[in-house]
Image 1 (cartoon, helix red, strand yellow):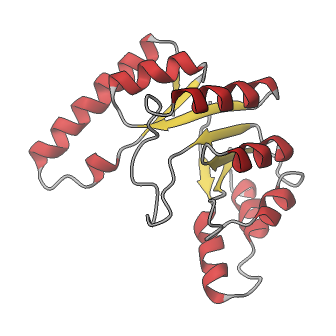
Image 2 (cartoon, rainbow, N blue to C red):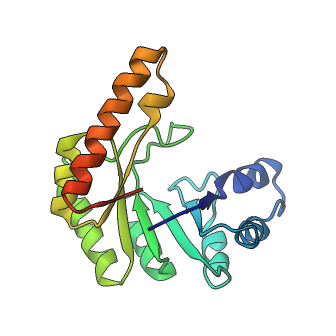
Length: 188
């Protein structure tokens, strides 16, 4: 189970915006580990807007804890994940125009592709999680892919406009959490 995972994407965002070699994502990751992080999370996007391939490959042999690589369900990203061989891969949806991941992966709509990716990563000894909406049908589809872990998207809660909306979303997340646990999934 992932405990404290530190996401270092925005260190790379600053570096890319500056057009320099600093701040260093390697130094940020190592400092996070020295400070008690249990894992380092990084998202290699198809558009490479922050993390770069070189960052991923440089970090992998240096990390003393776990690497949790977030990536889209594309042939290119799955091949990179297989080459890097992190301990964990979280499959996420990705749209080029979004600033950050805005919703959960549509496992139902992309079932065959997701299942194939989960199988390939699992065969390589990589624990795979799916970043999904707190939706019972998506959880059921996640189970059928063979993924052992799900991460529930909480953006709707974060964007709620009032207490009633927040409370309704908390209830939805709680129901989804229990449904996933009843299906023997680990929930991050």
